[in-house]
Image (cartoon, rainbow, N blue to C red; front, side, top):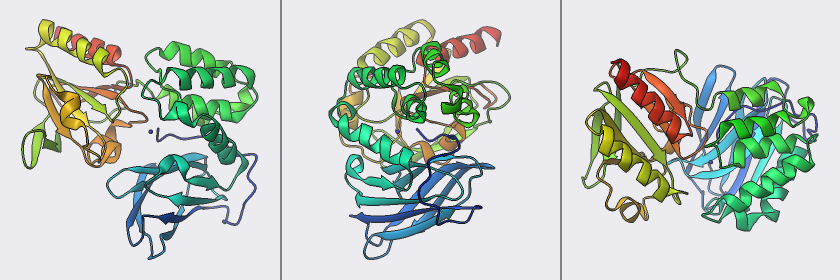
Length: 332
């Protein structure tokens, strides 16, 4: 799941919207009389709004984005339903069963339809807990289609191996300039960002594992690493080993808070069994109040917060998060 800005659509085929807005029209089963969330990066930052679906599961959302943006359609609790690229002038139509996100049809421009075709052809890879086959298919497509904007979309939205950001950067640079516009590459540059552009996050209100209610977490207390994930979490064993090693060496100085960032808690208890650090649940996922400030574009995601509540790192790489946390305790 990645919510990020995109490029100017040159292949739009439905332009029933005015040039100062775009429309997302949905007809979705299992969403009758429900509240739908629509999230995207607008001209002034993250937009997270709600719209009501009628008794037939139909809804219409109107938004504005001068530059192309990734629009996510979600349930009220944050479960993903569909994702599309849209910009002012587009009319995107979403149709299918809200409970089967991989099968929901997205129409409205050639790019979205090409993207959906790729997903359909590689459906088994998308549902495989091991992401290596999907990543290999994306790498192959990018290499063979440097002039295709879909190459950029796949790398940013669906590619999993962000442990090596330099590798992703190299693949992006191999795409023709016209197929990787600035609005999209800026989104990639934001991965792993740190410094004064990030916010202060003093508290989070999350459901604590093993309890029967929400708990306020005070973050401006020492150095904290937030570890956000959704099931099935790929490479959980590897991450667990890294956190355990860090806890053994620096456990008194670095606090680790593990956060399940999705509404579905099935399998949560089994996944975290045996882990000795704190575990919480964020029902709203990456759009949960407070967490949305971190600019999460994929899961897993890590953030480092210092003893003043300043977010000094936010990105997909645990090793980078650990490095930033160690730097903080060394300087402090």
